[in-house]
Image 1 (cartoon, helix red, strand yellow):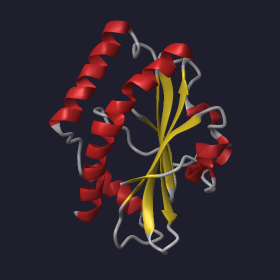
Image 2 (cartoon, one colour):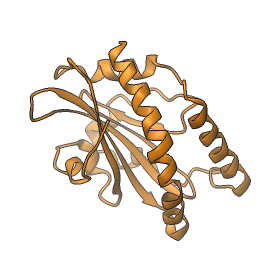
Image 3 (cartoon, helix red, strand yellow):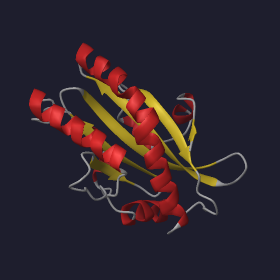
Image 4 (cartoon, one colour):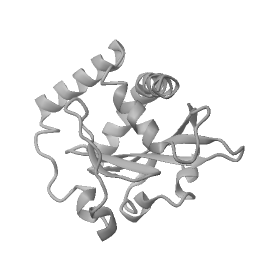
Amino acid sequence: MTRLETADHAVLPWRIHEMTADFRVEDTWSFRTPGAGPDDFPTMLAALRSSGDYQPPSTRWLFKARWRLGELFGWDRDRLPGASLRDRLPADLREAPRGRDSASMPLRAVYELDTESARELANKTVHAVMHLGWTRRPDGEYELRMTVLVKPNGWWGRAYMAAIAPFRYLVVYPAMTRQWERAWLGR
């Protein structure tokens, strides 16, 4: 996994740009996909899904603690009304497949195309989007890119994003990288 500049997301012709002008790019990462070709994005998504919901104990503990805090403070009680990107989709994307939701994943599918997909989470702290895209690198190889776009809900949302940053960088992203790269290699 390689962390990219946030501008690396903006220069590619992703459809997600049409719906997220009021979001900021929080993180952009590239994932190794040795031997991947231009049509392998659906294969990558299938590999990710088949890898299951396994999370290492450290990541599982962090998410349990986060959901418990959300329960105590009411952060996740109600999805924010009108907050779904599905409400912003252009007509052609409304007809596109959404992808499958998972009971163990709080992110809900927005759309899924041949080279990109988006999932979102909206609560009282933040509206977040995880965008996955398939792109060609300068060396001709293909890679998976993950970008996290956020729209914090007020000062509390900004403080929340700042507070969870170390956990994302030290625990969540490294664990996710290992899982995703293993899923691709083991497909």
